[in-house]
Amino acid sequence: MADEEICVQLYRDLCEASMRKDAHGMASVLADDYVLVHMTGMRQGKQAYIKAVCDGTLNHYSTEHDSIRVEVMPEGNKATINARSRVNAAVFGGGRHTWRLQQRLKAEKRNGTWLLVESRASIY
Image (cartoon, rainbow, N blue to C red; front, side, top):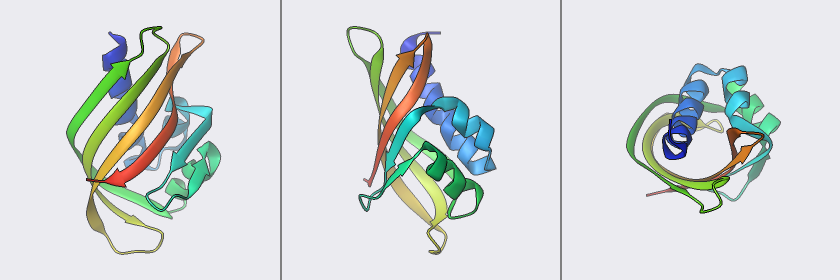
């Protein structure tokens, strides 16, 4: 599988694991130093993010992908993923809503394995 396809699958796997509240599945695609930057600017590390999904602070019910674009850097060990997805979610105690969520993710190949290292969320 090409690096671009692997990176697309990383994003899809994260979305699927989030909907299932699958801590192991999420952990398997996130680097230990992963950081999520929410729309509000709040930053969450890997463990805090996984905990928030699993304890119901962040609830993802469905995801429909509009576009997932990947650019692998010339050196071949870093990539950017620009994803636009419609995510049905209820977060931080708010009501359930479908968000047009744009994720700008960074991925790195570490020890031969692609992992997500950062995600910045916004709406589109």
